[in-house]
Length: 344
Ligand SMILES: C=CC1=C(C)c2cc3[nH]c(cc4nc(cc5[nH]c(cc1n2)c(C)c5CCC(=O)O)C(CCC(=O)O)=C4C)c(C)c3C=C
Ligand SMILES: [Fe+2]
Ligand SMILES: [Fe+2]
Image (tube, rainbow, N blue to C red; front, top):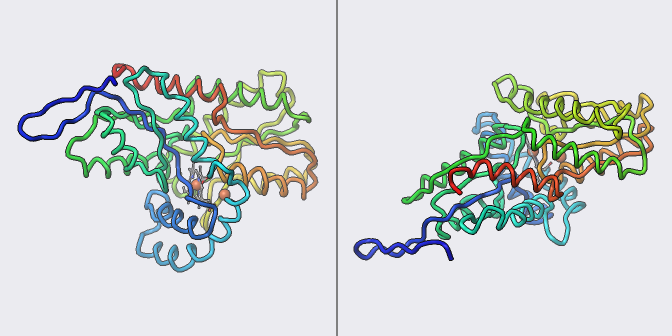
């Protein structure tokens, strides 16, 4: 054990200190692929005013009166298709990313993971890190592109948890990494390796990002610009490689939610339009997701395939996210190492 046990004056209990915590955080997921678990998860997620910016008095009526009575059944079917014996892929992959980081930064550093919505909660893991003697914590939101609906809500939740603590840790947050050379190199290498392994040569590569309401962009959220920059830099790099010779790149936005206008062009409409205009071989990458999840494994890989094939497409593949690939883990390690500098 490297932590020190400090004996404090009076009858104060012994307290551990001197350790450094690293907390990898991704969006969150239901506890199970059943409507009840999905309803509980969606209620927490969609009640966050960073995620849905409609005034809560009106939104809660719609959410509780309509959405939570219909969407959980539909979403549970999607989750059931991708659930594994290790549970939700998003939680499983995030836990394995954290596990792979254990021991890479010396024995003073404790690495853990949490989900912003659902379990394990940020509160439970931050409390556990403090109990382990971590008086410095590096928070790593696993989102390459900053969005208030994802990155800022992590900060909100960490601040809420801190507010309840008498003894707060020193904190650092990993910044968005959408244009970092280590991220782009990891993505380019990993996608090249996967394209080389395909049984067909793609004509088109879609770079599909999770969408958000168009109005959120107009309010000043940098997410769209971050996605566009990732897509441009990645395209520029891939275009130099023989595996991508003659490939046409398109950037699209998926997972539209609700009736308002979302970022365009949408992934589903683009897949159908590509099929209609005669594209036969298409591959999709999702550079906005650090880990595969229902949005990539179900919406892109299953629904997207049907959309493309029903419109005349022949060969279709969705490439894995960086997940726990060698390239992905090297990138996470480099990013954490840099952000831990001065602490280790
Ligand atoms: C990667 C960035 C993400 C942004 C930006 C984002 C915004 C956003 N999402 C919704 C609504 C839903 N998202 C859902 C799932 C989901 N979203 C992200 C990431 C971003 N969301 C991930 C990684 C996941 C997968 C979770 C998993 O368990 O695998 C869902 C739930 C699934 C469903 O019912 O379709 C909803 C709903 C909004 C409104 C929003 C606003 C900006
Ligand atoms: Fe989402
Ligand atoms: Fe979706």
